Amino acid sequence: MKKISQQKLINLSERRIKNSKTINAMVEITETKHIKEVCISLFKKPSEKTQERNRQALQLLRKARRG
Image (cartoon, rainbow, N blue to C red; front, top):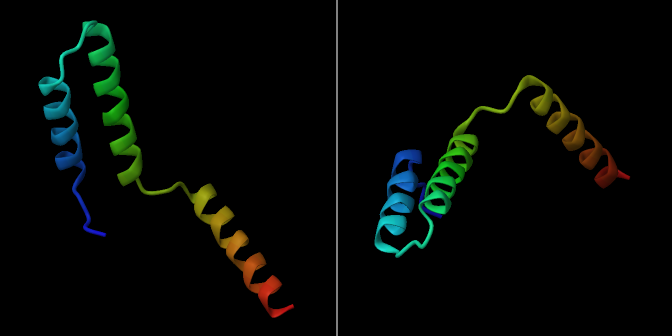
């Protein structure tokens, strides 16, 4: 899958919103804000707690495979 930059995702979503006819301006603002938040969270580095939880889960999976 081709990796798309955070800014490109935001630009594509904003262009789509501008091209669509919105009835309520508030819905448009909320949707744009939500899309930006999702894009930003996708590119954020996971916290130490999340990384540790992922390491533990991976260890459990490896242990389960070995039997």
